[in-house]
Length: 446
Image 1 (cartoon, one colour):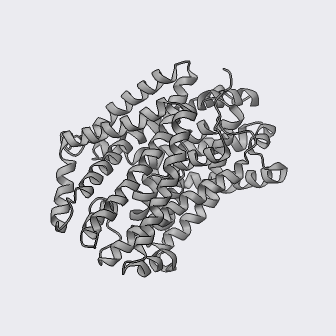
Image 2 (cartoon, one colour):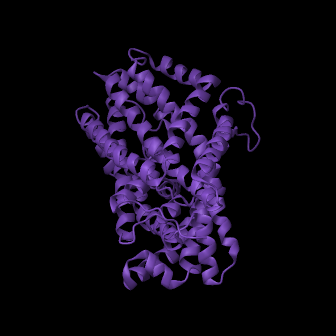
Image 3 (cartoon, rainbow, N blue to C red):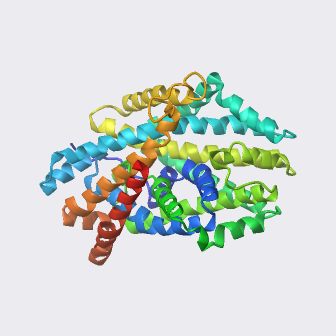
């Protein structure tokens, strides 16, 4: 199998693409409510530490496999395993990664479709003057409407796959170059607005002044898992992007840049969200409903609340859109590696994700009573098992392959950090990152 001919047009394009894959629901939806449930600053401190010790080294491992192989994930793993004299079965890790992304994107498209519905509602002023009970009941009614769930899921997936079909340079790179700066601009705008609210000081203290009494084993495990989830490692998505990475780009610098950009999104989103929540005297530990129930209630009581809520849901839609696009690409790349044209590969992925996504979309209405495993419906299963188990398992195998199986000279070359940089990375990933990833996996299984 020949090497891929496509490359990112610049170093900046690669960083924006990987950041686009990482930044999404994990930063703007999941981080605020997980931080809210786990003590704020204590969680944040441990989360940042695990990004450095766990997230960045495994991210570098995943990208360097793609960079060394210059093929789709399955083909790169197979070729590098053969070169090392290892079993060819390593290539199935690429297929496992594609399956993981497939499951994640199927529910991701459904939740992202909610942001379309809420953006339209906030622009229309539907939350103005509504009581907390009315907003909560409206969200429940929306979830229970199968037609709306299917429509928004279908629309979001159509938006995503039309960009993927255009290819790396014409599709992903152009959109990332446009939308990622816009996303950060909107975040800064929201954070600036948050600084004018009465809850701004309280939010900063809650996020940045840790109470070490809040550091429980549960907080540590949640922070570890979120550090893994938010950087989109473990599903071979970044491996696919490593195949397109410019030859002259520094991998360690790119990985650190992505991590900094990713953390900054979570922090800015946290400042914006919790400033409004505290300004209205609401509970920051409201769980997954924080985004779609608590925030509309909080914004509805503020001056120009509908405008700022519209900006927030536009931000959420852009973040999930860029993330979904960048997550869909590895699945398309895997099919292309099997000899299919991009257009055919995109159509197969789109139809498959749409069909499976219907099960999640209908989990709140038609299939609400269908609970095939552990008393959970399809949405609950697909939104928990792949992120909590498949991602750390994939990340563990990727780290082992890069740290223990790949030929040393290939790792040194792909890492691009010199001999000393390679030795430091190898020590960290072998004796820190891999054990921590195993702990994340155990926590997901328990």
